[in-house]
Length: 143
Image (cartoon, rainbow, N blue to C red; front, side):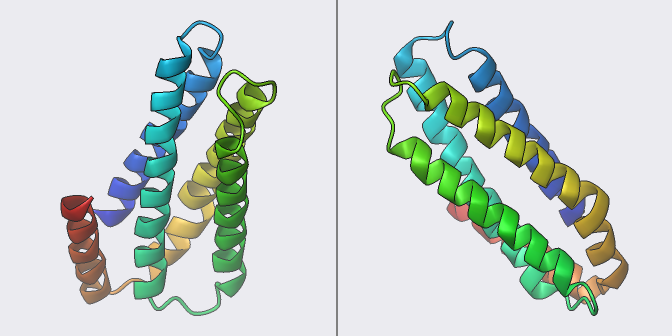
């Protein structure tokens, strides 16, 4: 398994679902928006767990600033997700919260794709990649 391709595919899928849910907010039923948002938020948390497995396993020298930037993104996305959970699906602000989350996650996905993952890939040993693949298999099977 190419762990980078796996994570990028997962992130692209989540980004698409987020933007689609935000775009169809006014057309879909509240129940559908709520259920889809719930699945997306669970998916985001799962994605962050997978990213952490990758980052914590690969011993990449000199990219602490990139790792910190990715963590900052994840922290902001978690805070936005928590804020969204505090708003009822039909209240003002829910649609904007979805849109904000979609925008920020798209930026995070692009950062991972163009900056963080290529640097991690340069540093990764075959043993580290195998370890990450095993961890991701476990996460996928458990979740």
